[in-house]
Image (tube, rainbow, N blue to C red):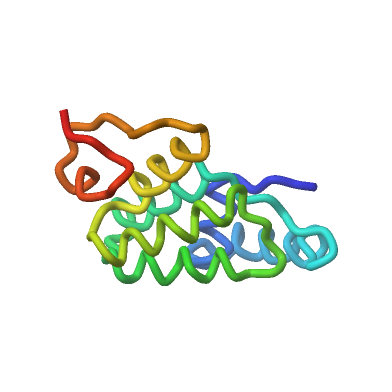
Length: 131
């Protein structure tokens, strides 16, 4: 299995750099298949959300749409996909950031009772407690 870094995923999704985007398409066509999908780590998903917001001014709704497409792409295998899907649902319900939601979900999977935070939006999620 081959893992993809955030910058490769951004080029694949946004096609904002013609040269790099073509390299990614060629790579994906030959290395990321349904039989042998490429891995997207939880960290890459969080970085992707941050890059879309901070560098490309995507709205939360647009970010959620992109993340949902990534989660459904058969040529990609998302680490902890169930936690990522649940985190995306959390975002829709509470307005929390995807990264915060995923942190809380992954911490729950690691048997944390809760995640301590100062972030009021993250505190809306049941897996967080505001200090």
